[in-house]
Image (cartoon, rainbow, N blue to C red; front, side, top):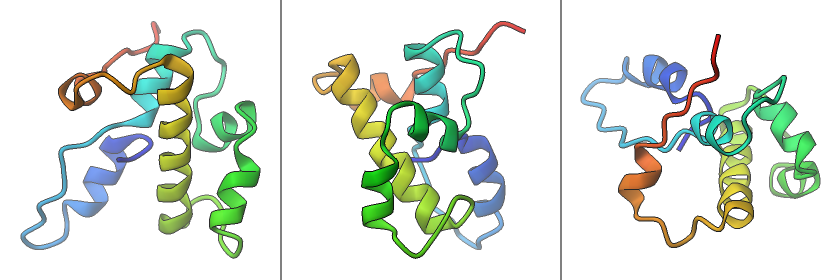
Length: 104
């Protein structure tokens, strides 16, 4: 689970013998579920869906770009998108393969 998993993979790929993955990317999910938004940053999506209170309750001492805070925010966003999109019944493979990119 990550928001913009490709960035996280680059950082975590430096760990010896890493076994991270598979990755559900909340950035890709948001692009699929909400095309046309002007900002898909984690903070913008948390704000748009009014999830900041929940994230702050879980991580009161941290802020964006802290690994723990971003991980928790990504999980809260993921749950919100599953709820809003009625996606709880999708198999994990479908979530892993969700790749909708904005047109450039």
